[in-house]
Length: 361
Figure (cartoon, one colour):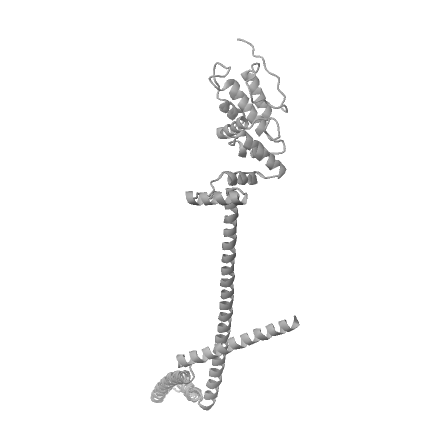
C-alpha cells in the first residue's frame, strides 16, 4: 500500500478556495477539518473554504481524484450537529464571494446576504455595510428595496412621451428628472389636500364628541332632577297617606292568654283523680286548642290582607309619581330645550375666552 503525503496545515491559516492543491491528500484534507473542529472561534469562513477546497480536489468527476468523494458526507461525520444543508450553504457563500471581495469587519452572515449578486454589486453592498455599520437585517432590507419591482418608472403613452421630451429639451433637463419633479409636485399637492380633509374630519369629530358630552351631561342632570323630585313627592304623599301597617299585638295578647289557660288546665289534669272532672277538663282544653288555631288563622289572614294592601298602596304611589316621565314626548322636548341651552352657554363661554385672548394679544 502506498504511503500518502500529508500536507502541513495550521488552523489559523486561511484555506485557499481556488484551484486544487496537487500536493493535498484526502487524509490531509480530513485532518484539516478535524483541526477546525477543535477551535472555539467562528468557523464558518474556515469551514466554508475547507469545503470548497475539498470539493475542488476530491468532489467532482473532473477533479484530480480518480474517485469523487461526497465532501458534505465527510463534513457531516466531523460535525454531526449540523445538517448537510448547512454545509452546502457555507460552500455556496465561499464559492460565490472570493477572498478579494470579503470584508473583515463584517460577519459571514453579511456575505451570505450578497452571495447571489454579481461581483460589482457584492463589492458595493459590502463596502456600504462597513461604512454605514449595517446589521444583517438592514443590509438585507436595503438590497431587497433596490431589487424588488417598483411602481416606477410609469409607462407613458407615445404622445405624452413626446411632449415630455420636447419640454425637457426646452428647459435643459432630462425627461426622467422632469417627470420625477412633476410626480413629486402632484403627490405633495394631493398629500396637502388629504391632510386638510383629515384635519376637517378631526375637527368635526371633536365637535361631535363635545356635543355628545354635553348631551350626556344634560341627560344625566335631567334624570337626577327627576329622580330627586319623585323621591320628594313620594315622601310627602307618604306623610299624608301613610302605608298600611299591620299590628300583630292583639293576636299576640290573645294567643298568650290561651296558652296560659292551656297550661293551667294541663296542671289540673295532672292533679285531679276524679274521672268525671278529668273528662270536663279535657273537653275544656280541646275547646281552647281549637280557639288557639282559629286565632292563628285570623293572624295569618290579617298578615296576607296587609301585604295585599301594602302592594296596592305602593302601586298607587308609583302611578302617581312614576320613575320615568309619563309623557315621553313632553320630556324629550324639555330635554332638547335643556341641551340647546347648554350649547348656547358653551358657545358663549368660548366666545368670551376668545375675546379675552384677543384683548391680551
